[in-house]
Image 1 (cartoon, rainbow, N blue to C red):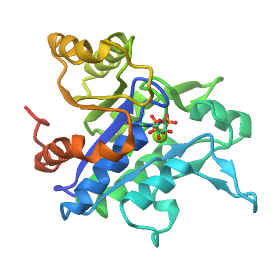
Image 2 (image 1 turned 45 degrees about the vertical axis):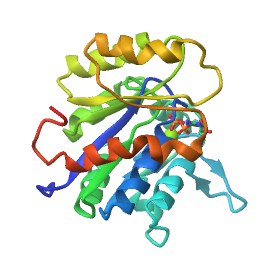
Image 3 (image 1 turned 90 degrees about the vertical axis):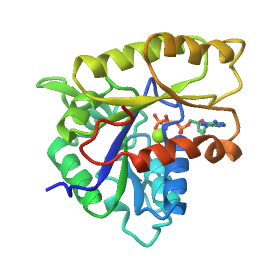
Image 4 (image 1 turned 180 degrees about the vertical axis):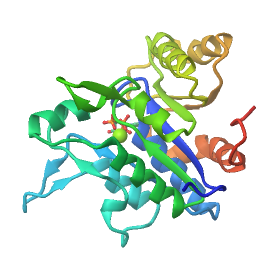
Length: 244
Ligand SMILES: Nc1ncnc2c1ncn2[C@@H]1O[C@H](COP(=O)(O)OP(=O)(O)OP(=O)(O)O)[C@@H](O)[C@H]1O
Ligand SMILES: [Mg+2]
């Protein structure tokens, strides 16, 4: 079902709020500017605010659609489930009485792959956030969803004290599940970064983790810093181990 030449990557993070959407949108803008049919989607989004008409508005999926310049395309091609409470998807859904169907999310990804050359799939929160399922029957995590998709991951991490630990935990969990990971993007998503700015990337590399980019605070220059990553994503052909 997956077209042979569609490249797809799963954008996961060491936490919620680390900059997955900011990075994903910048990569999509670069790829579209490079002539690729590229887009990003977010199969489940929680924390959606209701508009005046009471319709839940998914900020991330809307940003993905805008980044690809695809405003006329129905939002349903960018998101499958919109949830109101700002909680892990499985928990927000349970509280809203909504049953999340992982297979429907996989279908959304496959349809998006069929419509693109390069697809980025944004997860929710961090790698082991409860993504679907229920308390009673057990939860599936974001990692379970990546495995079901069979696509490589890319980690966005905070450029902050603590990030070596968070990134290694995420990397090693991907490794344990045999999910290939192309590397880490360190993102200064707030102004809390101190002297660890100089040492984080070096330390991660000493653990064998490729740091693909270090993004400074301020959204204006993200694309400049991500140009090389976008090129490498575009150059990675389907079926190859990414960036080996
Ligand atoms: N390099 C940066 N410079 C300035 N602000 C940034 C940067 N990266 C991210 N931000 C801001 O930080 C906030 C969180 O970023 P973002 O929404 O991309 O995180 P996320 O990982 O996608 O979160 P979620 O788990 O909710 O999807 C946003 O307000 C975003 O604009
Ligand atoms: Mg996001």
